[in-house]
Length: 253
Ligand code: MF3
Ligand code: CO
Image (tube, rainbow, N blue to C red):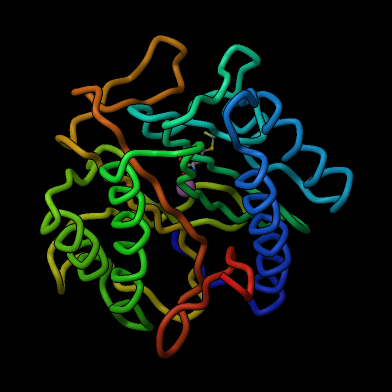
């Protein structure tokens, strides 16, 4: 079921989203060569739970064991933080996190260069972020999700990247994943219509190579099939009469 959130519920998501945006900012700053992804996870947990009295939405979700997903280079999403994964210069790290407030959740992800990173990887991360903003330009009350998907897909593919098909954005609110599905590909004018008050996590994942994915042995991590680098950028938004409000960005972003 696709739900329209009440102003009160959207306000809870606004609060959750601000805490999430600050968490991602904190983790981005801490992510440098020599730091383990488990350390980043502890930082995020402490900030969300101890400093903000909020909920780490991913922890125990479907049995997921951490606050963050930390995915490196060819890993697209759902990498599990580990003491053994020490960040190294030149890597592209994707951090994905969820925060809940008064029963309502938000979800967002950033791609972070570790130390000095190749132009090729930086460009991939940049285009991924831009594809999100290209996509949301076309979204407003009454628009169809295919229009969003086509805008994201066209932007990324025109620049030579593969747009991941097997993983998609989603509705969000009382749980992290709700209806509707929000693909990063599609045909303008097709798909479900969105309306004011719907809350969506929009999350392009784009690859240097092909869009095909591979599931890894830990049961969570999803990587590119060809081993080439991937980027991810995600925000939770609420549909408005004339566009969207992004709930997981800081004012200064
Ligand atoms: N942002 C992730 C997604 O939409 C959320 C993962 S929740 C987890 O798939 F528990 F699986 F990490
Ligand atoms: Co998501």
